Length: 132
Ligand code: 9YT
Image 1 (cartoon, rainbow, N blue to C red):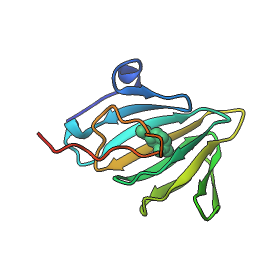
Image 2 (cartoon, rainbow, N blue to C red):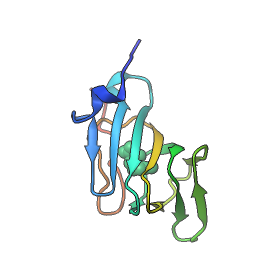
Image 3 (cartoon, rainbow, N blue to C red):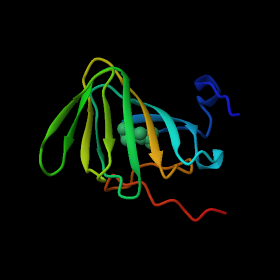
Image 4 (cartoon, rainbow, N blue to C red):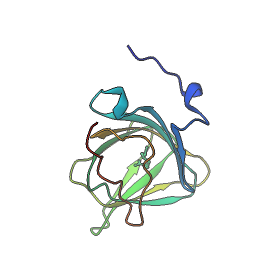
């Protein structure tokens, strides 16, 4: 069994940060669960362009508020505690956190992230390398 606490991950290589978010990677491919699970903080008042072309992601909001805007349709979905959204169609989107409070999310990826992924210029995470 695997048991971890967020405090054991903060400021380690599993704590991946960019200018708009911090992703604490509680489960990764190496844990061999078939998915990865992260606690992600989207900084208040920021927006991030995301387009996962090689992964499905499900996102559950536990605190804060914000929105997802689909590209190119412009359709907007509000996010608040209790909201789940699932990017089952490799949906390209903007993810925004409202000003005033960070948006806190639990995120799962299939296939699992390897560990150090950050978005490229198109908002994409690279495809996972072949398993060793
Ligand atoms: C919701 C989302 O995709 N945010 C960007 C970070 C990502 N969730 C991650 O790597 O944990």
